[in-house]
Length: 320
View 1 (spheres, rainbow, N blue to C red):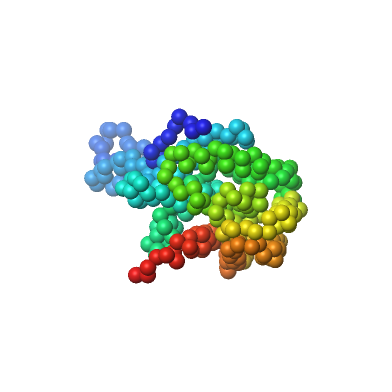
View 2 (cartoon, one colour):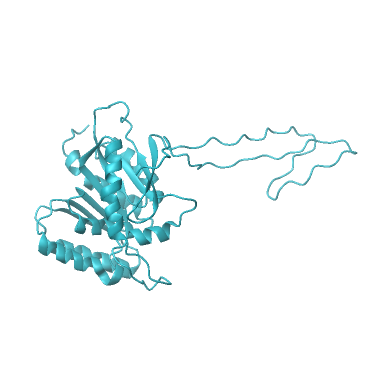
């Protein structure tokens, strides 16, 4: 259930701390001023003392709210960062498409910034952004997402020990708690849900597509970690196609050209397998983003993926 703390805006300090240290000239008998901290020059004798800067104002994300949810399924606490469209308060009868974004702690600001340009260029409508993150003091994002976003427990060669396997629990939490909480509180169009994620988040996006294909209308998997557990997701995709050859969904698959060679190979192999399945009704887009690695690929890949997700809407718009 939604926790007691619901803040109207995300009060996260992002500003710089500025200060000034100066010393007025003093009579010879007076105690001299202490030396300034390293890197701060002392004021010239007789110079006027500049005012000490006040504490900076807090920078807030406009039109945003923060919900706290506890998951009985995973036993973990989550922060749900909700970005509202600019027209949300002015148009109380309007409902909006909604993007559920994994790794909200890292990518919410990126998507929030991209959405403005996409709206301006009339290639995407106004939409809600629901960034899924973790609550608590200094949460270990890498460890937490490693448990939630993986469908099986595995011991990758780069890890000291085995981890993961809570994908089914997290998917149940997403379906049974996050979606209802958002849709009860906000005016979203449940027929226009999109799920997106990168890396392990991309792997979970594919896992959700395979296990719950009707939960979302669009699935955006950026640089998905499809090599996980000896290519587990490859096997599940073949099983899905055998059971359900028709898939009326929009599916985005991408990887950066310069990511780790084996990672890129795994991605391309999965993309080729998915294309070969030739699902009826699917609208599929595959892209290798040139010149980009694992983290830097996200701005371009998300920009392209969101344009793809909203292409049906954009086709209804009149050009300027």
